[in-house]
Amino acid sequence: MKKIAVLTGAGVSAESGLKTFRDHDGLWHDHRIEDVATPEAWERDMDLVNQFYNERRKNLLEAMPNEAHIALARLEEKYNVTVITQNVDDLHERGGSSNVLHLHGELKKVRSTVDPELVYELNGWELKRGDLCEKGSQLRPHIVWFGEAVPLIEDAAGIVQEADIVIIIGTSLQVYPAAGLIHYAFAGAPKYYIDPKAVQVPFIPMLEIIRKPAGEGVPELVDKLMLNVEF
Image 1 (cartoon, rainbow, N blue to C red):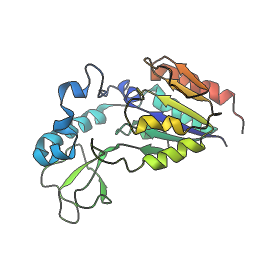
Image 2 (image 1 turned 135 degrees about the vertical axis):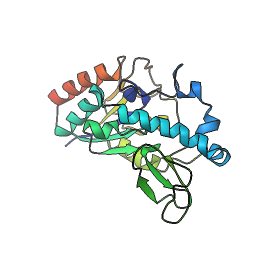
Image 3 (image 1 turned 90 degrees about the horizontal axis):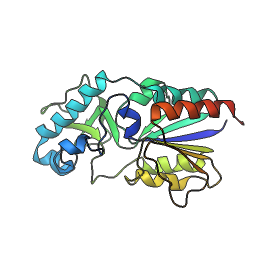
Image 4 (image 1 turned 180 degrees about the vertical axis):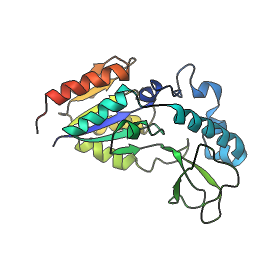
């Protein structure tokens, strides 16, 4: 069974009503990165950081998977699919994808501040000061903040390297290290880049640009791939 690696960014979730971070009306327009998304921000003002992520969780609970999420799950009928996402929401999972790697963490999970291996599902949407792990330390959002290492980036690179087909959706390909993953793809592998603002990526052979929103472009591509399967 052929392997497909799918790289997704905020543009996929935007159609479900979740704000992107970098667009003109995005989250970074309303909040400084340095104030809500760095280890230093957590040390300086834990309550503000928690408020920011609590609001994101409330929004996520109201959001539903869109046509792009649901279409990607259909690919699993005929392909071995791994979704590698920069998104911290769970819309891929709720859309039916069974193999999702979250590069930047998961919004609905929290982890210990003394032991990063202690990760918990958060009950509800609110994380508060005084919520502790089993070792007695404060819990923090299970998010990879700016300035922190991306623990799963090597796993993601290996998945892309082994893929027969690579699909990129809803990302500007400007945020590293995630943006560098496309360069691990096999030169002869077909590659599809779906985004209304997509531009050609230098030195990437066999890259087809599909300048459409995810909810439109992904189902169309999935229909095409489902009709042209070579095992």
